[in-house]
Image (cartoon, rainbow, N blue to C red):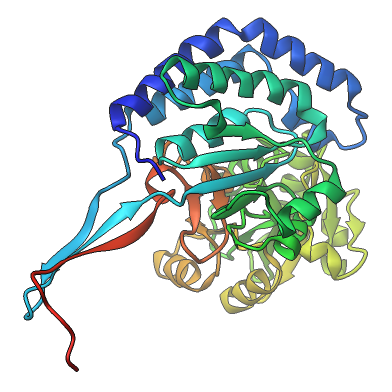
Length: 400
């Protein structure tokens, strides 16, 4: 594919900043149409759909951030000369065409596409029907910016297909697709993985855990758990499960205090049988499937474990591999936890809400990958590349 010069890509992004800022009314009017048509049976999906001036500011800030980052394409990752005189370089390269499939969040139309574009990829955007009016206006902004800078509008395309048509599209795409990134719930991810015929980068289901060790500092525990659960209920980095160590001194009083703080935030409490008497208004866990569930709702689940090894085993058995935290005063214990828990981000005495490109210093992100290939965690500009080998010779042939 054509490799665009950095100045050309940055010029498109400069145009986008101006166009988005000047299109606020059109964007918010379109979003209002989507909100009016939305049946509010899924509060988390509705929350992701809502745009306001602050979110438009966030789109502009994301574009500015990516514009200011170094071009990730063509960087030499390694180089050397072999005994036979061949000079070999490994350089970063674009994927080619990336299909991004996402639910509700129209800001993805800007924040994900800007990364893929700066990394020199062509972009196909398959947003949900609940955001179709907003996405059309935002993609029109992209097209205006591309055309202002002498590029064809089809660098970035919006796809509006129903479920059956999307299935057929994935099985037999009318154009080559090099990578698919599904951003949404587990059903969407499973649907894409089942039908896609190219690489799929899984953008992760949350179901994040916190283990409160017996020696945890409860002055830290309370604000960390409250923040991780309630700061943004609909985020994939929100906390869903809390494991408390059965050896915790004064556990009844501590759990009562934590339960009261969560109920004050309108969070529903679920608990294993031994903890039910310690958590007022808590309901029993219905069955094992609850431990696998990502809530995306004001709901949290409490379990009891006998020590560090049991906590690690339970987290690795049930979590989504996204984020997990240990709250402990013992640095050695924390290190064992962080080494052995199989998640993209592991925390010691901190909220899981930091699993985010901006909060982790990556900048704007395409997704939080829970895959182990080719990258895990926030997928920012530097991670949105593949690589290829450049081999320079002077007549060499292989004889063995």
